[in-house]
Amino acid sequence: MRRELTDALAPDTAFAEAGNIWEVLQQAPQCGVVMLAAPLTDVSARTLTELLGRRHPWLPIVVLDPPDAEAQTGPMSV
Image: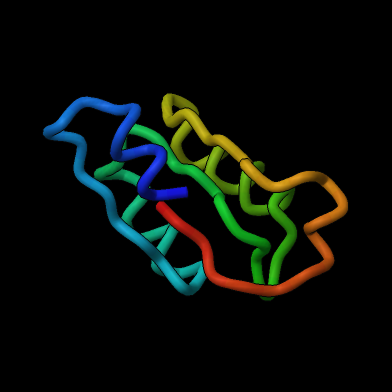
């Protein structure tokens, strides 16, 4: 996924990855967009999206996994 994004986006695009929900919440204010690219642990993508939307209403959030993937676990990207 990251390789495809690197190829598609501007060369100066910076990426950061987070493995925990708290890291996403900490890094989000400095991001131009949050992409949830893997199933999440501890919280559903919908819940995290709603939380980020309340804290940072200007921040675009993209969920790249299908809705049925929310029950699985794994790392996430920011």
